[in-house]
Length: 276
Image (cartoon, rainbow, N blue to C red; front, side, top):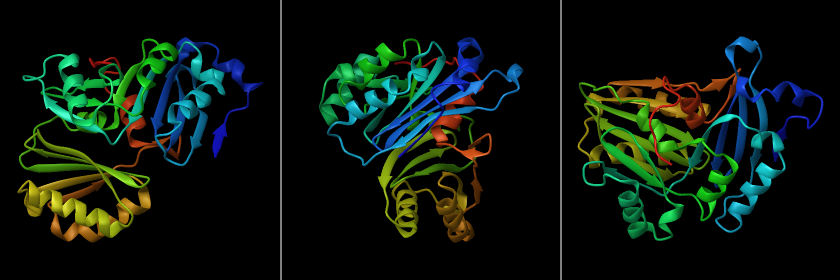
């Protein structure tokens, strides 16, 4: 299932690549790409493609490559943010793992694979090492030279870098999975991805995580993002038990987009330091 811009006619206005910014979201569930205009253009963002597929490791790289090659606009010379949504990530202290190579070796020791496939982001005191499928990193380096590449967990962690006087949890709900970031006074305690089937599953996961890390619910702030109906229902259910619950709506020109895409394109410093 996909949504694409017409291959002819409207594409001419996109040819001035210096006036548009590309955002790409890649996961085992699908591929999405958007173009964001320079504010001086007075134009709306454009959806290039939103394509979904049945999640499977087998053939995933081929599906991603086909999505790119079938939409040549994606390959034009835009500045770009690429978000790789993976449920296989590890977080490491920067002081103990100072280089990307150190992080890649640690990742491979846990998940296996080739260190050349591992990507790394730094978020202050921590580094996040991740991969989605073999060969993806080299494909992106060839297809999107100079692009900034992020994991969705690193972007979510980066959305809450200010110290807090208590516990805070950022919970992003996606199709069949949810990312949970837990912080204590701004310091990272936990970053994890969980599979869910029902709202009850998510409620249990959240409460169990807080108990595991000894975070009292009455002292914990929760910020939900992602699937609107699910998070709003959870907010109503959990509100009596938490210090505060907020809902983050991440839209692009009135249309809901993945949280990680929103965070990538709205960073105060779009060219902030990160690693690839």
